[in-house]
Amino acid sequence: MVKRISSSLSSSSSNKLTGLTQAIKDKTRQLGFVLAGVTSSESSAHFDVFQGWLDSNRHGTMDYLASERSRSRRADPKLILPECKSILILALPYQKPDLTGFQKPVRSFPQIAAYALGNDYHDAILPRLKEIVQFIEEQVGHPIPNRYYTDTGPILERELAQRAGLGWIGKNSMLINPKAGSTFLLAEILLGIELEQDESLVTDHCGTCTRCIDACPTNCILPNRTIDARRCISFLTIENKGDIPEDLRPQMGNWIFGCDICQQVCPWNRFSLPADPALAPSIPLPTLTDDLILTSSGFNQRFKHSPIKRAKRRGYLRNLAVVIGNVGTEDDLPFLEEASKDDEELIRDHAQWAINKINRRSGF
Image (cartoon, rainbow, N blue to C red; front, side, top):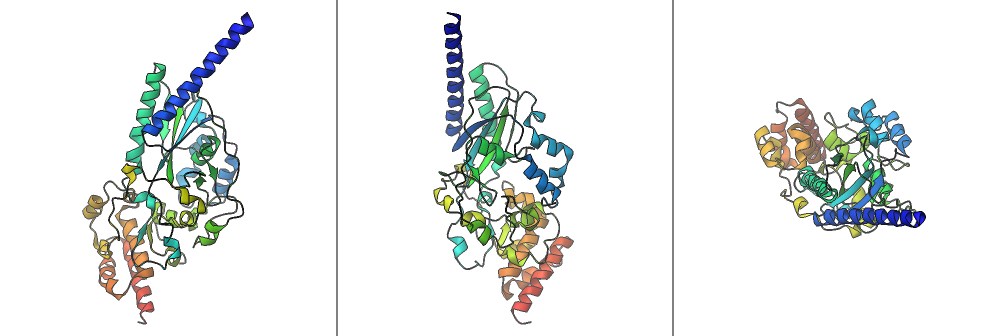
């Protein structure tokens, strides 16, 4: 009798866990997340890859990643939330990159990474994470210790997503899902309750394909599925706050903020899902050359709700000057001349580089 009662209680508890986990996943779908998975709060099994990446200085100037606090928390989620028992991983889709764009001649107008064509994803995702936490607390009837992030927390989110069954880490370091490609943003909620865990996705579906590696103009994709940030166009145009190395400027092509090339050529992105309405493109393209004379107030007003504000005016105009140097014409010289007199030395230097390049191309 005791064994039968114990077995019955165990079965009841398991059913409740399954029911709660499913209710949470249903809620996330109602809020627009297309993927949801649960993993444990166990320490990272691949922290040595991250450690080696840092030791090789492939994080560039992102020194915050190399701090002792950052390293230790990425190794063990419980250093972020000691009560953590489960981690809920979510994915919100953004605009599919132009999958034919890479096959066309370099365009004369600047390009922006697809995820940044809409409003800032932090503004779209964080309120939804808060709503999910509130939903879970309503379901269990009491407050729950929690932390939630979307690319701002000291965690290895792609490894956690793989552990939660959301996909595999591709050769270009992106998380790829067989039914959604890689055009989605990840978010995580660390929770102080047990949830039913999903099986990790261990199969590598990249196979022998090397399209992303072959297409990368700066050769920043490394053999161990990490990126040398110092050569990555996304890093150079966003996180990098200083000069763009002259030998890499021509390889930037027409990318002024981020880069989609490795995703444009990835065959799995033919399965990319429609963008969440909050992330639908809202920035008019093409970006005009006269952006080179944008004032600080003009920049802030135009990109108030855009991820592009991360680059700040000086970074955005620096990037734009390089792109115009790569694909511009003599018609752009008056704007570059004006930018070469800017108060910011960073803008002046890159504008002068662009002027020189156009003049050489024109035979002057």
